[in-house]
Length: 207
Length: 259
Image 1 (cartoon, rainbow over the protein chains, first blue to last red):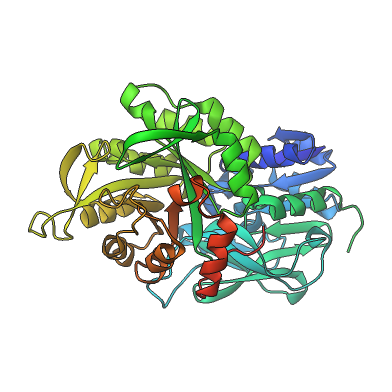
Image 2 (image 1 turned 90 degrees about the vertical axis):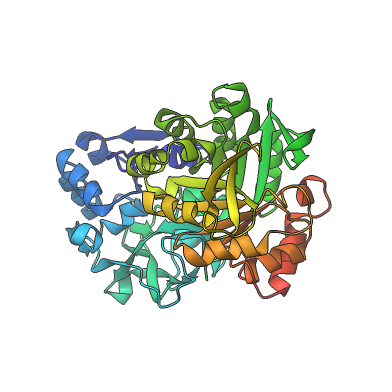
């Protein structure tokens, strides 16, 4: 059973359908008690970091999220669900985030006017460190991104994959023990994205 | 590197994909779900569905079809045609579409762009536009006028001014569909695409006229498009998506290679 945290940060349909298509049962919840007893957790989200943080506070989900990550429950952050794991975001004039991963979330800057912001589309991920979620996925595979802000992880040891866009090379995949977070949308990234989700579902051993 | 997207367009009428020339003489091409799966498996980067008769017949959007597409393919897709209000947008997005496309509705009520962006995020809101070439004038400084309802109605709005306004209102992307080249397979309207793309900061999707791989190369290189819509050239079986992508890779364009 996959538990998807619903904290009113965007539409969960595609995440739910992606897991169902690989034969997984899904539970969507905003209740702390469901999160505390989950086997595997998906922390998705689109939108703004501040709205996401406000919603997590309001639903009293911050402590349960900290606890399951500390306890080593496999945990996958996606897009805004990745960004709020860092210390802070430049979005909305500075938003304090969860600080579970070291680093900050910054706004894309481009010296090339033809480079559009937000980044929308398929970009490559350079795999820095082998990780169970990349099992069977080639280095430099493309994933689907939609974002104006990007995570910059401060500790090399937490960087699993990197992507180049605008003037930045950013941490598109980061993690720590049983926590892994991706800036792209695996649920929208075709067969390779589904492979990553399958790998997450099969992930039981630490790396 | 961010890749140039190739987006098959499926015009759907009564659950069948159809194709016409300049919005007329439509013929049935197949089942939308089967075609979506086939194109997705063959490496298209995104899909767009227009429920083309919804608007004219005043029917609601076929939400069941949107749901079936979302279950069958796991790449982004947009849905347009017949969106009348925020509630329609919500239904389409909750059914699993990544984006909704508004065209005539936004011309009548530009605020729908701002309201949609606020409710669902700019990334979900695509502005579709159907410009036609006109004499450059004070009224039409870009030399293109926005039409609605498949060329039938002229709006008196300049295409570039409309694109900029849509961006300011919060559109996340603009599909520029040239009325002059739509369905002709004779090449995109490069000049139009370039004017819009160079003057807005959001991605521009070129549409109308794709017939050969060279047309796509031209619209990416000269037209500065971020993505391009194709229809007849693949619906007829003249090209596969892989053949198209191989040609674009040979031309040194950044293209998604693994799927």
